[in-house]
Length: 218
Image (cartoon, rainbow, N blue to C red; front, side):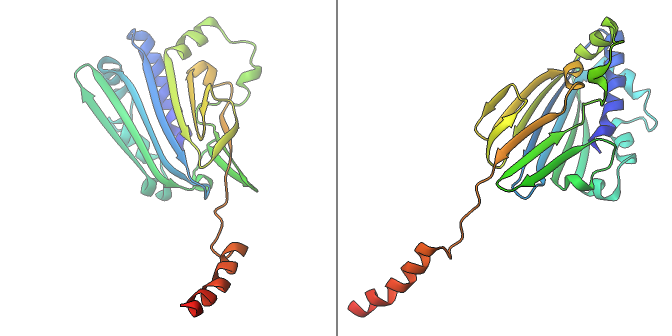
């Protein structure tokens, strides 16, 4: 589903170059221990001029209307989209809650896998398969992509033990890429999830056996 945002982004980036502006994305993602995306919040920021130019290229006259038009019923239940214009700045905010990644549509998307005590997360939103091997890229391609910056913040349900993030602190990780770099590799993180021990362990059973003895003494 989030892959549907990318064509919109490419349009905005191209228009940014024409309008001598730039575009930035700030995205926050929280993964829960059950393998769902507890929260996703993406804010796409651009100048008002770029926003106005891009609106004229939407079929519905609205980013969010075009976005919703392509969602499945499941995605419509879990995602919202809002457009904000303040002064010379425009922001598109996409929010998702309690998302099952396996139910998202699109050729590439978010993926969460649980393997024993570990949980792995991939986000393919900006990744273009085969891009890493491309040899015919021009400086123009890089210049356009460099106008678009991505600040990505991930929170995992346990300590992160492996990732391609630039910053890792416990169960949180950060990526600060431009679109050119992000197109080369997906966001990735692996975390160790500690299983919560139940109340029926050996110590608890011993405790239950001792209680009657203590009561008799009283």
